[in-house]
Length: 385
Image (cartoon, one colour):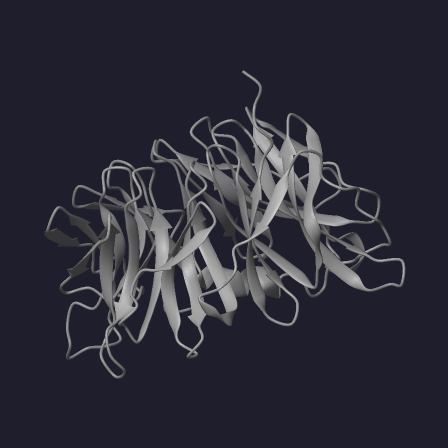
């Protein structure tokens, strides 16, 4: 799952990448649906389940930003009487996690929404994740006297358990949640005093640091098996794509001719996707990769286009974005799906694109940026029985 906070970082990567003229063919069998808005000009979508139900945040006609559920073509405001809110995650049962600010000036609280009933979670700030057991993960502020200290939490059927503080030397005690898996394991992240990333896994009260104390490990995704992917760097500052499993970090390498890489997502079969890059990003750009069983392969794109893989589901279907130039030289981006070795460009081109989630059924969720932000759900062709 990808959170709203990751979108800014995703867009920031677009600047230095090279682009070459290319015209994308129309997608075969896919349907691209603009989810609309709650009356205002902007919609940000964060999560989609296998039924194609989408959650996120949309601007109202009055200029407020509210949590929404989009289902069967209808967008519903989940907090119509609130000041501000956002829905961040949805599971297969339709349970939703998010956060809400009930009135201007009040603090935010995490919430769980299910079948029209909203449950506020006392002692919390932001709800970020919800797993298939209905557990909500997010960020809490343990002490009102210290507003700068935050800690992940796991809420289970009315019981709140806080994760933290981080116990490692020369590391800030505050941290935030990255992911929550089916067993209630938390993937968290903070920084040390030298601004190096520190990632950890918390399970049943035990916290395990990922990577070495003299390096840094930026975790991006957690599988239900407890395996983690991300990127690591040492003194030379070059990035390595890493898979952490069974207490060991495995360097996944790079594509031939490249010098650094980052892993963005992992499925339950330890298939990993991300990007690999050459020494000069303005010349070589990025190339999406798929790693499995010790081998890293590129996702083929037209000559001159760059690519990044963001998501992979348990069927091995991959989604991400490609960048290229229109015939007039204008740089554009487009979402893609990679299924059974074939890359399919999705929808139309835009100034910038962020792929935020992919369902187990293959739906690809994206936000497109032109004059504003709009949410697009790319629905795959129906599978033949």
